[in-house]
View 1 (cartoon, one colour):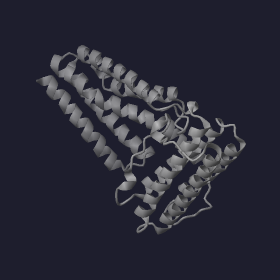
View 2 (cartoon, rainbow, N blue to C red):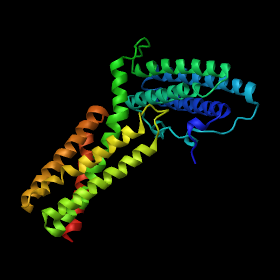
View 3 (spheres, rainbow, N blue to C red):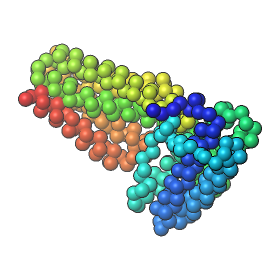
View 4 (tube, one colour):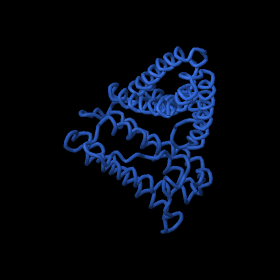
Length: 318
């Protein structure tokens, strides 16, 4: 079972910090290796960041030994609630500079949040100073991560607008998009299966309403319980859960409302049009906020939606 961060002792916090710095350093080494041929300047930056993380780890280990002795318990990010699971895309080749930049920003934000939270839980003056110094270094790393590109401009400063936009995407857009996709796609099958099985707009509406509300409640709890946001900057779990739940319900309700029309054929045509608009909106949001190419986003969303749609009609007509 994962531990709550607030329940960690000073000894465990330092042990966790050692593990985090080691993991970040190894990821940066993978970034440098994957970008060296195409983006040599960016690869050099990651190599420098890896060396800095190695220095941080050495300082943490020295402090730990002086305070608690030689044995450092194995405490990893997955053992503590509040960390986001990292997808190891850095092991694939070739690496995409846009994905690397985003991952580096998220990693530095997460580590910085960790040090900020850790400072409030330790009382030893020496440990607090070390954690504060490391938090300041991670802030500078965030600035450097934003300057990644074929030509590196280290003096580029993080703008408040960009910082605000990232938080908006992290706390609102991502959970909202997850809910909208789940609500729009997962409810297609039961709604259209019920519609074709009964040929009754009223029955299809009731099934769609139940599926939408049920999915919204399920997604809201799943998102709220997945991460308390204390270390990742993803915001309050209640807010994220509410956004996800509402967007899930909205995604399902959209193509359910047309079945309020008593004429089945008219309701069906209207529902299909709304499904197309929903899938288009999802593709646009992914392109606008997640930097997914529009054609790629549209293809992925439409293929998934069409398959679920066909499955619903096929089951309902059986």
